Image 1: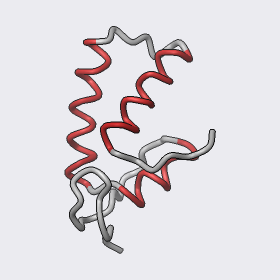
Image 2: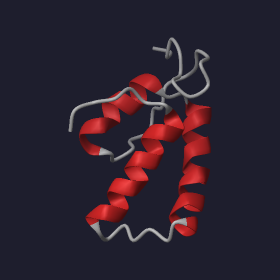
Image 3: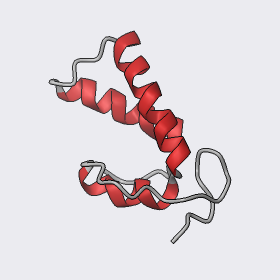
Image 4: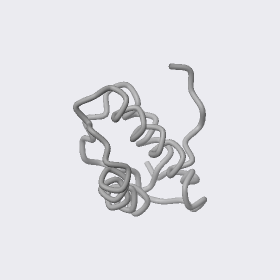
Amino acid sequence: MAIDQCTRCGKPGDPIEEPLYMGKIEPLIKAHVCVPCWAEWANQRVIIINELRLNLGEADGRKQLKDQMWTFLSLPQQDE
């Protein structure tokens, strides 16, 4: 089933098929983000980790990366 409108690019597209290993937010990402935009995020993620010198072994580093992902992909707000 195709995505009606990707939150990042605003176009309809193919959904992400591969497992993302993102826990509870994986279904949300797969329902709102198309494959090309997810690939764009994968490249941007590396840049963000390096530029901000994030330590993903710490909760704060993971939270910063998640916040950046949320903004980059224009995902709908959710309660944590």
